[in-house]
Image (cartoon, rainbow, N blue to C red; front, side, top):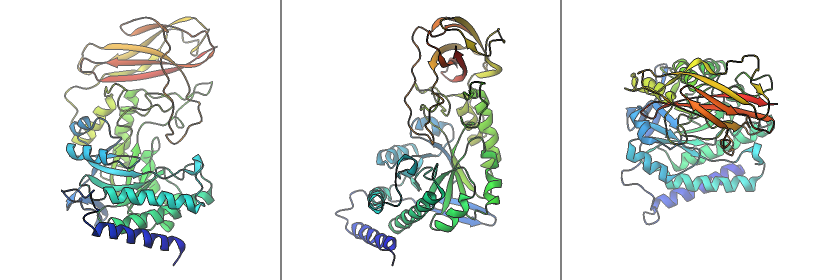
Length: 433
């Protein structure tokens, strides 16, 4: 028996001893665990929950659960273990793909360090023991893009360790599938299939190339089902750039159209897809404060939420969000290429409309641009605040902005609200030079 198998035996034996002693098992939920299974019905894979078909219409993040339910969603995905999130989801009738955090090689974790691995396994074992009987639990997700920016040798160690963790979970919890979450697809699917046979499915995070996932899964002969564990707009690594190398973010209208198109292409009615988790059902800073978010920081929903409502329910919401036109943010001097002298005053306009013809409220701000930072894989970034007193005046669809006196890269942001509080967003990279 190898060291890892022996360690697994002791962990699983300890887990069974704990389960057998009701006095110590204080975390067992009265409703009992849900029973979730993956079966193959003809050419299709099917996820069932307590014997009933369950196609995941999910969102990444634990915010705005009421709005998720109202939009037709049924599940959330987390990146770390949380009983509180399970309790909240249960109250809303939602399930949870529970993330089990694992350390990342790109952040210094050494998967050849047995002491570190044992500590990580022990923590995950405790988390699984605590939460496995919660009725809102749908499945376990081991890590998130752990292989991202690893060497081939490091990646092999990662897959071997994920297999050890998957075996451990399966010994403790027979009722819920286990997946790991990877960044995109490719040849690593062959390694995972060989080195992680215990996994029930694979979670795939994909953005601009999501429409290619079904063909890529087939190309690399992945024999199990997949779940799209993150999907969203074209990422900052996939879009066009300014001539001074800043990524050009799509408007919320372009994003909503993209979400709809790729969902149809890679998720809906695909025989080996068990569903998806849209990213991000909340708000975070990642290159900008609007790039991957379906909500503003104050909770205002974007038109991407409307697109997901249509996909999940088959119907548009009664009131739809404003839209940004093809001209986006512009000024009448097309010769500048959006490079402006320090302290100059510039007028910008936005092309925006409302599907119901409602009156619109338009606000603007200017922020320092830091989209060229080195963060990757969703690593935490510090929020960039608006520059004070940059807005000289604003009326209807146009604004006058005074450029900073300090040269550098900046972005002009616009937020177009309807009376219900729904919002459309756009931004424009500019350079003060």
